[in-house]
Length: 108
Length: 110
Image 1 (tube, rainbow over the protein chains, first blue to last red):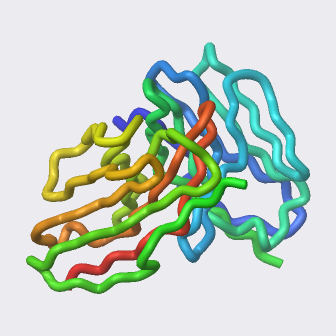
Image 2: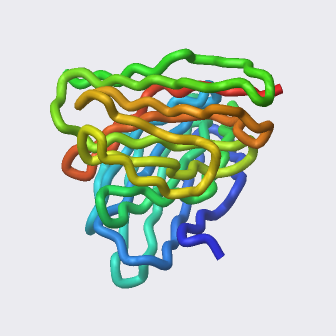
């Protein structure tokens, strides 16, 4: 069993839909990242969370430390949101352990 | 502002050939540095990390090695590449928990 599990693995939706991607982890962490990887491979960090909720534009990330669970939400989804979204937890000396990623496709 | 450079962007190498990938960071000092690999169809995997010059920790035993000859330079090497070394290699640095990723090198071993 992976230490970080994401669901779903693939998600296809229509433009405008509300999107939720889930992440569960089984290890102790100091914080959690949500990352976005575009088809070219480049990765950007969307959020780093250690508690509660963060919002940036149409993106919202939440984390429940007691339940070891985090969610990434996208409101009013758009085709440009199509990407792979990766959950990663921070252990020890800022080492990241990654989920397998969720491939999101938003159709116009 | 901080910038991270990686080169080359793409690389095709025959099995058994050597490898050297370089990563440099600008705009920060004494960063933690990381090498990650993403094999085809798989998630990212931490290969090496470094908390200072000459300090390298290996996460996965393999035929790769890493070196940090200068504060902001991180090099990934191999003496003899295997087919299984193909993948997307990412360098990253971190401060205060935030991680910043380089553009990556796509390596194909033929």
